[in-house]
Length: 622
Image 1 (cartoon, rainbow, N blue to C red):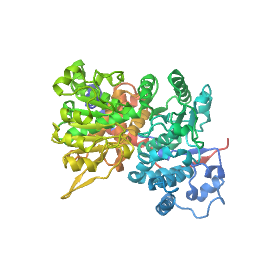
Image 2: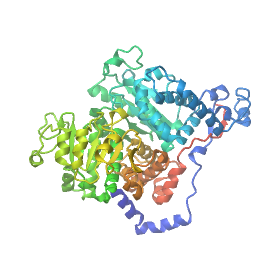
Image 3: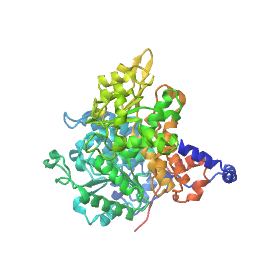
Image 4: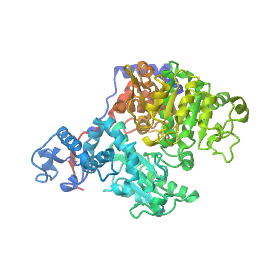
């Protein structure tokens, strides 16, 4: 909306037309694709075979084996990468049945074990398998299986992946970052393990979520896997079970709080941006009390964002805009939607803040517009409806607390239950970010039948699967075929009979955060602005075709994730240019970025996306 119209006006400005015509006649010559850049190594022989970044096993040609000192260290038959993958997939299908580690293990966790072993020995092949089978394996490397991985990480740990900074490393982090072997790092995902998915405080085990997110950065956004870094900041844990577990790998002491905690995060941020000034840091699964505070502390100084606050909000906004389209209305009608939100944590408040800003922009972006947007939300937490009568109200939720003057005619009061709120408000949308499985009970869903919309929307966004507020089966069985359903974790579509399908949309953050990161990287933006995040959400919202949306499909299939990410990243690049935040990337400076058309921007993004192709390896002595 705002960013789209701004870019349109900008592209049609009279002083730009001659340059656009010139570019259309003389398209830019792009540099070598990211995946085909040669790699210079200072190692030979077994050192290469033991390095998953560069090992390609039996795919090394005889020429390469001679050049790199590998002849005789591998079986004589040279196979192509596809033959390697075929052999791996055959083994995976055969072995996953036998790799369960006792009765508590699951087949998804068994698949994760097998994939992790491949990751340990050959990264290029691992990402080729992941990309080619993204619908099957995204739920393995990411939600929901990553939740099981984090819960069992001490027992699954085989080799270090990423970096660990602890409270005991205070004063040493600036030197520690130089222990990481990569001279260039583009993306860091960092967590303190305090709120992993909806599973609570998992301490140092939370690094599993950072690893999984970066796998998707590589698979979806084409970030070079040699330039990503998962990070765990271990400031202790308040999980009593872990504190008493002799096998726990983290600090067995209670979490730091207050200024001591902030000083650790400050030192980490200064260290990584000193060594890698252009890195992008994504904060992941920090508990609510720190998520907002750290975001506000760093976002105007560093290239960083919080996926739980901003990524979740963007995906939710895209879904909410899609729901308006699915109701047969234009997206400009979004400010008329009545939305009940279950959950007032970092994700819930992040969504409400972003959605209200989107509504306000559509209404004129003035004080009256913001007040009107605020009035469209009813937030319910564990204590019920949040009103201004609430004692010790969370400062982040306070702007959306319902006022006494509003409550009388609504027939509601402080602490009203979710069922009461749905009955009285008759919302167009109920949005769950509560981490409470089954919260949208039969009674809540029955109450939604009286919605003011002929096609109400249910967003059961909490992860992992067991924490979803309801299942699509429950929603469609009670509300019928007209309901729009989306969830954070994957569910199967529902067969409604007579050839009709109840579509289960996965409103997963992976639709946005890879494109936000890639677009920020390729634009060279100094910071990640609200406008850039809004442009990403708008592009995702407009990605689906009209006929798909009217069928109730508001999010695209995961199989199209690289194309989605390319489009989102291009929108982020163009918005960074429009806001004069872009500083360029490699040989493309800010002025050249500004001259690119929309199509050329998409091509620029595509060219800079890494693909899992074995590169040319050149040996050079130290």
